[in-house]
Length: 497
Ligand code: SF4
Image (cartoon, rainbow, N blue to C red; front, side, top):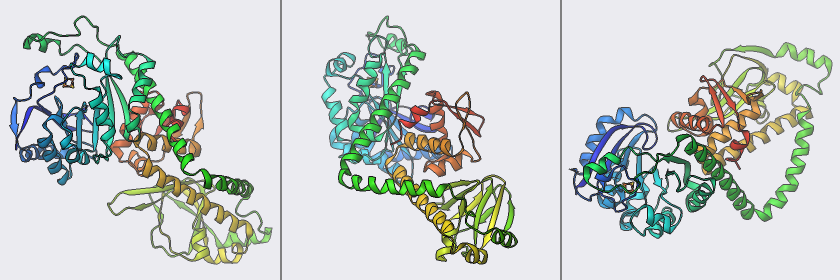
């Protein structure tokens, strides 16, 4: 089996995440008025390749793909060559490549179940928001076909993320009202949409039409103003994030209507208990002379950035109270990734529960900055703290906070897309280490991009890309690699439940 390949771009940077090899396939029936690749519209032509040859080509470029990059099929309309596309994707996935398909949703549905489960990112073109506009912009009455594609992604096994793309032509869809229509149109796929991109219409392809002797239907239309397109892109992403949040909230409420009422009552009790406990420092109910005795039994350790405080399997011999600095608590997952659970700082403690129930440490504690840590031995703990209601309550509260945190983390990892995870992480950091300044909430980070990714369940390249996008959207500012300034807290909050 062979596919017709118009051309190959070996190091593409705009057709999906990271660096990618892009195969532009022949054939597209839509004939969009602004198409800048009219030479790809013919069904046949170009080079004929087998899926095995596709694999052979991309093997050469594998070292450049990094964590996020991979292979993209674009066009033309790649779904038109369904059989070839399905076979190529299956081979690529078997070999561990990240895959991406750039489509207008106009292909042969018979092949969708063989194609869609093997696509990591769908670059989904949204041409128009109603039937008439679709027919006018393309040359076919294909709006219903497009909607059917949107609605069938899930049932055809698509599990990836979607980047929605819309080419904005001045005078056609360049208004906030149209951006709201765009968001509404993609409602069936909201859960999978990672970002909305507005591509300003340009006239770079006009010359090709002259060369091919095809009349250009947008003759005289000026290129779209890039600044205005960016404004509307920011607006569309905001509307989308708010709509998605409202939808998730409504779904969560509907699902848990009964248990939620019960939970609300106990939440109230718990938060009242928490607010009382928070006011009590760990040593508060110890007698003055006991404190003096304890001073002989505890040590103040200076721990340098990067040093381990405890490791998985360490026996429950000490608990640690952070006096100054920051510590991360994490595990190494089976696939070698680091999963950070908590970042602890001044006043936080860890290990109390281990001493109480005498179980070894399950996680790893490592200093993120130079730290001063009070090390309390089991002997001191047993003698002075074991019977202290204040300490027991503090341990209980910490454990409760950790359970909540873990629950949130599981939910975040399971149900959020990359934007939500990144926004959630920034909000968490804002609460924890944010400092209000005239420019916004300043976050002085002690973590690298990789550690930020590990904290939020994202890869380093994804978190870097997401931070770049948030910067472009005006939500944050990046000052070097260690400082983030949150400029639009509301916008970030709109991503998070
Ligand atoms: S869908 Fe893409 S390739 Fe097809 S005509 Fe439109 S712009 Fe050109």
